Image (cartoon, rainbow over all chains, first blue to last red; front, side):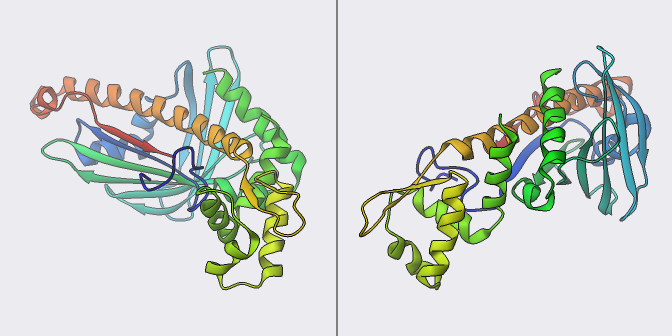
Length: 158
Length: 128
């Protein structure tokens, strides 16, 4: 990234991607379980949110669906399908927010990888892509703008 | 943030050649033939891509009839970046929660928490 001139758009030369790297003070199996085991998966909701439903068919092609309720009562649902499931190593799944009728908004692809980072520590690589294909995939503008409004409203509640 | 603008921007960005053109323009304004050179593409093909980019408001073109120079227009890209940024905030916040939750779990089992003190706060690197 450093080769780019200042103010150059991050989206220009490569696929638009969101990347986050974190090191957690927990063994790999536990960090992986936090993503996959409903017992743990409900415990790290966004601020002000409570996870009220989790569904995770942990296999390629298996469905994921998570429901959350904000303290103000508003519900938010996200869903997707697992593309890759490698225990303690890698999860790849599609991700989209749903509107009130359960219609899925723009879909992105999430990839999470886990590796050892010393005794009892785990480095997690998170990468979300697909932002730039959203509009072309999602031909009907109405659906797109509605789901975008949802998303904007959703982030506004955080 | 107007969703229509974002749709047009995303459509325009969905093509790798157009992203490459934008990357070149990030280095400064240039002419169509200069743009076409590295792409092994005919001038009309490049012009077609430029029209898509121009319609999406991602570039502007000079009015000089002879060599209408192409310039990068930053605003729509900034809108996309902001949208991605919202997602980033969402995940960062969740990962903060995850970090605390994992710490809580480890505290319940002190024998597996040997390295925690030394490790301190988790390192993070983000890129959009």
